[in-house]
Image (cartoon, rainbow, N blue to C red):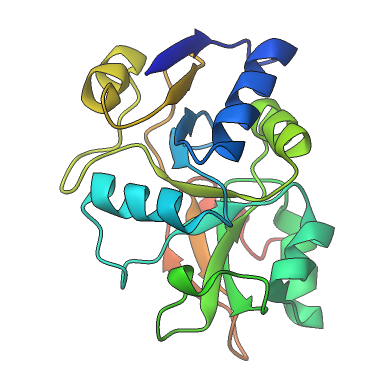
Length: 205
């Protein structure tokens, strides 16, 4: 695994380019977000997604989420009602995962029997730069193993994923509180998980 120490405020362009190239080649990347460290790959690379399922020990019923650069991009991959749009516009970018009805652009491997998907727009410069350079959404699951706490120590992350991940964008110690999850696929919003900045949900909406 290649480990690159990246600057949070002014990410080195060559490091962002290197991570994007790994994604294009079907590799796995660990990257910082506005919550916990994320483990990701190209949304449209089935083999890479299979690698993440194997690495995480996840069954496909445990669906993976992905990150997009903005609310406009989300509309390509999910159906967003007017009430859902209002809530998302209020909270994004930020530490929230929204469950939405998936569009036909979402790969079937992520859907299984359910037709909903989790989508995030992190408030993180590194994520935004990576998405801009790569050009596709990126899978986003926590960089942790089954039955394991959220990892925030970069040395521990590097040791655990040394042989399973291709590149690690190391931004120092990360967070340990995951994103809040809100299901907007039905008529009424439903909070699935109370995570980071949960208290902001629906305030001012």
